[in-house]
Structures are given as C-alpha cells and as structure tokens.
Image (cartoon, one colour):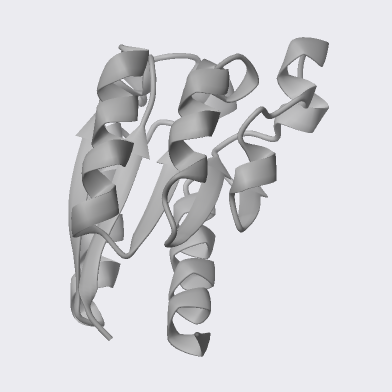
Length: 147
C-alpha cells in the first residue's frame, strides 16, 4: 500500500522530552515523528507531520488532509478534551483516523477523562508511552490494508 499519513500533534507537544517527563517520557516530538516516519516509509507510506499550539492550524491541516492523505494519527493534547471544532473537522475526513496519547487520560485528572474526538476516530491508543505511536501505526496499517 501507499499514500500519505498526516501525523498531527497539538498544543504543548513541542515540549515533549522536557515537559513532565515522568508522565510523557523523555522522547522528544522530533524523535517520535522520526520513528513513525521510519516505520511508515519501510512499508510504502509517506508522513506529513504537523505540530501546532493553535487550534485553527490543526483544523486547517485536517481540511488539507482530505485531499492529500489516506489517514490521520492525532495526538491533540489538551484539545482532545475541549475542541468541538477539531472534532467537527475530523468528522469530515473519510480516511482512517487514530487518536493517540502517551499517557492514559483515564488514569489522570477528571477533565482528561472525556475525549471530544473519540466518537469520530476509528480507535484510540493510550497509556503506552512512546510505544503508543508504534501501536497506533500498526493499527493504522491493519485498517488501511484490510479495506
């Protein structure tokens, strides 16, 4: 198979590696993206990675992906719990969508227990640290290649 995957990262994820490493680990966002890209390219997919601290930028990236990508892997950060606009944008994307989190939101503060985007994605991978991105990629490929 082939095609482009949008790897979308929300607010504060640019601080991975230094922001509360006891929760999010010491791996930087660039390292997560490079590992994801390496796995994707090994099986014929390209990766377009976008990180923004601004909700509108993430929405625009989803809109653009409607014409360019076969799938979206999204770690929306705190917007996971608050952004109905991002949820609406994701609902317009017809390809495979995987929500990913390094930590387990259900085991954290109560406001993190609700995901506004969970209802418009194929599935969620959470709580496995850096392995979360590997698991999300494996699930994504399985879904793409089984259709």
